[in-house]
Amino acid sequence: MKEIILIKNGELALKGLNRRTFEDMLIKNMRRRLEPAGKFKFTVAQSTIVAEPEDGADIEEAVERMEKIFGIAGFSRAAAVEKDMETILRSAEEYLAPLLLTARTFKVEAKRADKKFPLKSPEICAETGGYLLRKFPHLSVDVHNPDVTVNVEIRDTHAYIHGNQIKGAGGMPTGSAGKAALLISGGIDSPVAGYMMAKRGLELIAVHFASPPYTSERAEQKVHSLLKQVSKYAGRIKLFVVPFTEIQELIKDNCPEDIFTVIMRRMMMRTAQLIAASEKAGALITGESVGQVASQTMPAIACTDAVCEIPVFRPLIGMDKDEVVAISRKIETFDISILPYEDCCTVFTPRHPKTRPTIGYVEECEKALETDRLSREAAENARVVYINA
Ligand code: ATP
Ligand code: MG
Image (cartoon, rainbow, N blue to C red; front, side):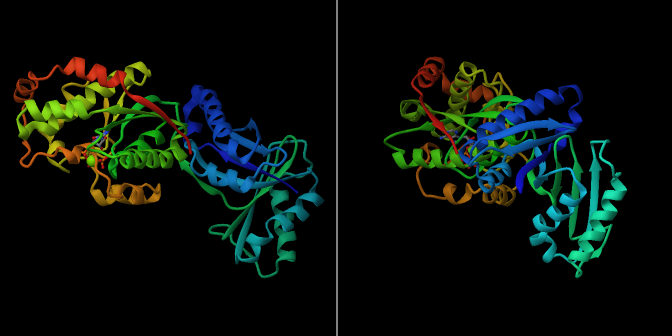
């Protein structure tokens, strides 16, 4: 029996005229992301996408990958069989046996896209239901809250038979909302922020500031591992590793200690914006959340924002740490994030940071630095690493 995957594209269905563009993008993403599982042929009909495995493709692995592709509300593994009632009944019995044997109740739903098929939907339901009741006598019908819904769809070339739907990752197809630059540290928050914005359809590039020898090679490897995990959802990510040692030392030697962090964050934003511009990315993404640390008070965020000319997306802004941790566990970045390697921020943390810096004070302190030249050079000297799941 031939098995295929049927994809119902949730939120996409709402997009009216743009729907085709979104669908095409989703298919392009699926094609790329399923590649390690083998070749699949994609066709679209009546807001359902059919992924048909070609020779040797691994459907188990494809399903595992499919669960992490944004823009898919739900999908089903289905048997694709000949459009003949006899075959449909026997295939449903055989294909859904593992599901039906452990269920107590079921119902049948039928869709007849091919109006030439001799039975109408209610007749298909009645025949299939009756047949399955005879073959699995322990079952009873429950139309309101069944353990298993048996679906029979009569389409152009085949009849598709499937059981309960698998939940998809939701959101919008990666890339459909444009591109943004994620500032990623080795912490818990920024990978979650990247995941959340990718879910809204943003393609990610990433920027990481490294300060060797204060930060180690392993700290950078940790960022690679985090992004690899995020790329299971977001697709390939181009990472820029920016040398930040000189800037941090200059800040340390020339600026008052209580304002280090805010100046450092402004330098990060300036540099990230230059990289974003060169990559045609229209926004920055950070893992900040109000009040979490001294550099994330409202006045400190205002000082950071003052140097930003493109929007800064902070999807965690109103979240508690435990809510962020729950997501980081779900996307399996948590265990990597808590590895103990130094981040450039922790190396230069002031003892008594100003929690209410003003823009005037920060700008005054920054006069000691050639901020434009330093950020331009940092951006130019960034090293590129491609991260792929
Ligand atoms: P995280 O868990 O993401 O490190 P955090 O709560 O520790 O966040 P900060 O260290 O103040 O907070 O950093 C705030 C945000 O600044 C991070 O979420 C990240 O977006 C960015 N950031 C911090 N350090 C770096 C770095 N070394 N490289 C790139 N971005 C960074
Ligand atoms: Mg941090």
